[in-house]
Image (cartoon, rainbow, N blue to C red):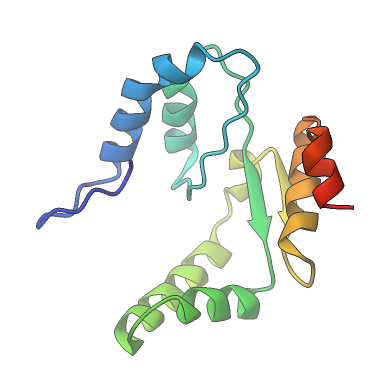
Length: 139
């Protein structure tokens, strides 16, 4: 949906334009809960994302972990040292940012806890309710 295969890599505007185009379809669904996993480049991109989903309640959660853990996670996903090194450098740039507090609404740590527990915290922070069948799976 946001990263089509092509001989030419689309720029970040592709995902934003695609979201803007499909949002009217999602907006027709009553009580829709939509999570868009993404890295938000800056405050301007947050504004653009918000504008792409008119009429929605727009909340940004920053998932966090210690820097060493982030570097281990991104490096483990890559097939060679070139890409592992590039992503570790990306984590360095992320750690140096001073605007994150203005972009996010809240943070949730993903370190040293099961994925389901971190997801539950995100859901609680946003104010959503787990469906009863989902609640049973995570208790």
